[in-house]
Structures are given as structure tokens and as C-alpha cells.
Length: 214
Image (cartoon, rainbow, N blue to C red):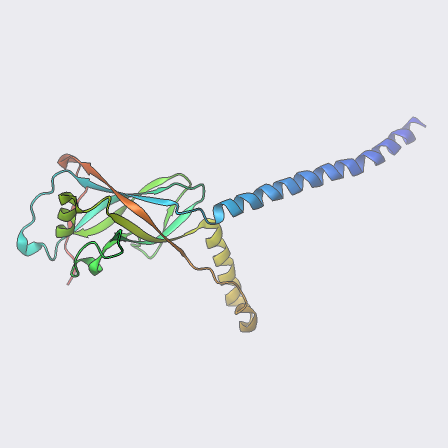
């Protein structure tokens, strides 16, 4: 008699336990969805810090047009999402190239694609990369023509979006063309951020001359 009463009470408790498990599951799914939405596209997540020495050694005039300097730059991720940086270019605030034609592609190029791979920056993380810059352009920055009047135009995406892109790309390779054409297309986002300049003493210089191949 006691055993049947205990079993009867247990049968009444099971639906409640199932409801509690379902509630916890829904809560976890909701948190995951909210976090995915939050990290899908953070607002203008990157900041760029150009690191240069206080006094730049003189460069012979005849070498100025061919000499490039490898300069360090810090890229800061201010968001809670993992960001993939694909490309960045330095421009003046008014949109014109900061330096005259004849320099590296008429603009300064952030060298983040040594092997055609993006620079991956974790949440709230700061990483260092390299900036190829011509000697006259670097001297222009030392003369006070860079920094507050210059921005970095950059192309980027997030880990969540990159994963969706990888899944769709895989499906497009294995589905019939009629179905593959209906898959969503994921493009990179573009933003611009101010370029800050940090001056170091000569003994901490991070400039390394590079002579481009003809």
C-alpha cells in the first residue's frame, strides 16, 4: 500500500520535473540566442594605435622613393565578439588619401594579410600587426600631419558570421545549383576608426627598412 502511494506521488512529480528541465533548456537556448545577436555585429569594434619612435633617422633623398619601413601597429577590439580583420587603409578624415600618389598604392596599407589570412582579434583583446609605410609618409606623421586628422577604413566580420559563411559555402559546393543559388550571401562589413599615434624613444624603435622588389 505504501509502495503504491509512493509510486503515485512520483508519477505526479515527473511532469513537474520535465517542465523544470524544459524551462532550463529554453532559458539556455534564449541566453545563447541573445549572446549570438549581441556578438553578431558589434558597433565599430576596432581601434588602431600607430607606434612610432620619437626621432626618425634621416633617410637619403635618393632612397626615399623606394624605401619602405615596417612599423608596428596595435589593433584593439573594444567589443565582446571575436573580430576577423581582413583589410585596413589609412585615410584623412575628409576621405582623401593622406599621402600623394607614388607611395604604397597611393595609400598606407596595413599588412595583415601575409598569407591571405585575416587577423583574428579576441574579445577585449589588443594584438600587434605590421604597417608598411614609405619613409616620406612616416616623416609626415612625425611632422604632425598624422594622428588626429587620420582614420583607418577597415573591412571586418565576426566569428559567428564567418561560421555561417563557411556553412553556406560548404552547402553551396554540395547542393544542386538551383538550391545553392538560394543560400544567403555573407559580405564583410566596413567601418572607420580614428588613428592614434604613440611616440617611443629611439632605443625602442620598431621601424625596419624594407626594400620592395622591382
